[in-house]
Length: 70
Length: 246
Image: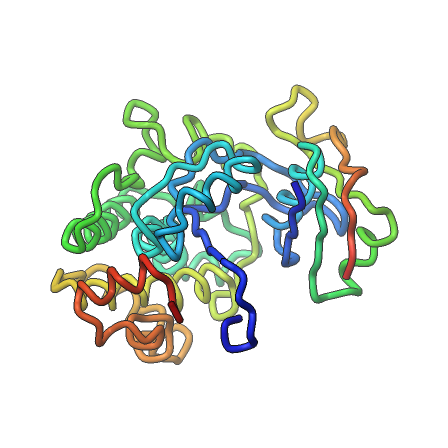
């Protein structure tokens, strides 16, 4: 499915990452391009997932398929 | 969108809460403590609910259909949980560098206020004809009760993360803007529309307004500012079913 995530808050980052990992095509937008630069450059959002055994200390999952724009 | 000439069949859906309990840990990193397990969701126009939720369920399997967008707005947990937490913790929030409103800030007296406020929300829902489940916030705190939107043990997982030990600027934070000026003001106006007394909501709204120096009953998102205060219940139901500009 094609999904657009609009906004730069906590939940938007979680949404973009989770939806990309679930196999959806994600377009991610936030208005603050400067704050968004690290995501724009890498094309990824790293998720620390508290439900995984290595929670909180490591980057457990990545979202490489997210198509990101600003 | 209609005024701009867009003729697409657009439906908007609103969930009872954000599907994630999460905090960014860096400019490209987010920590997720909890994902929602139940998402009561209302759609406007409600006549498109099956179509919209059929799409949305592909992304959010936890979605549960409810009557319409107003039922969804009155399921919103933010204006119930956050106003008592930030307003009754205003002193420590301003005094200490960081303060966890969900841990040391969640004390029995504050929980009693939350429960009283939630009782008002549920009374407004019932007066407007919306049925159970009302997802009482007490379920969030007590695993012996029904499963709430974030599933069991979510409050413990949230406080265990430490991510909610934060510096909160009362006049700017979204718990004040989103949950008092928008959400709580809406609940107060909905109570007035429905003829249901909401003294706890009204009191918290007055305190939030005093803290911010702005009368949120007048300037917030209310039945008046949304433009539906003058509709009778039948006209409001039609609007919710058919959508604006139908």
